[in-house]
Image (cartoon, rainbow, N blue to C red; front, side, top):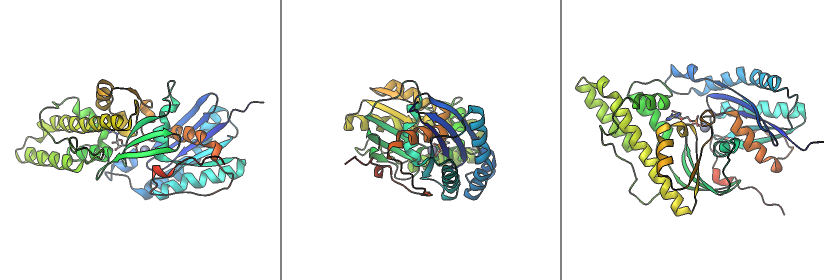
Length: 341
Ligand code: KG4
Ligand code: ZN
């Protein structure tokens, strides 16, 4: 008899329906993703009600397809994103996970979305050992975390205003790019001169490990207005994008190096949607003094695989009580693993 366990992961916190099967011995078996990006693009951002409805439409067929293709009849556990995120969207994943858990008589594990992001590199062939520093940069969060062990998370720095991804998305919108603008802005920046504008590197020279992106956003807005008034915005768009990206990346890399040195950590995990940014990856590789770990590109943004692996790592603490947990705000620092008595 084998002791290997298969965990089904379910992610529905925002605008991606993600599912995956993770095996404690073989690693990731299969994953599938349905993106709602096209549905929300017309509104310039995620519409919560539309997100919930589309998760309802897609989640069960996606799970069925995943299980059929992987030839798995029933998992040993189900992990679902319980927060933070859009409550209506989270409730779809929580409801389906608990319903299937009851039908299959298996353990159901609520997972913190950001813990999923920070454990996503555990899906790769060369995963990091604890302890490490994590830079979590997504549409909703910018966090520097000292990860001492599973569940031992100390937040060293966070954003005082916009998240890094939000700053990319808002700047992209100012430049007339579609939603979500982060990847489109990065692409436009490839054609621009990143020294064309000397945008501020917010808080970089202050001792705090917190971030602030609103001043940078305002500086970009003023340049966009100036270029518009002069009738040459089209000619300057790529330069503005490149200069913005350079300033944002300098800030992220600078603060990360400071955090690693003050916390005495030599390994770094970069995760979350902005972790897919190539300039950030290249600069971090050049400047960070220790080893840097990333999830593969498609697991930087929201996905079911990171929830499956995080749930699998927390199986030992799972209770067999069914509970629909869906929380909009949830601190990572509250996740300490209970110690055995
Ligand atoms: O982690 P994620 O998929 O969702 C949240 O949990 O928020 O992150 C999405 C964010 C968006 O703001 C998106 O524009 C940004 O990640 N993003 C990027 C890139 N790819 C995704 N930002 C900059 N460069 C990229 N290549
Ligand atoms: Zn995310």
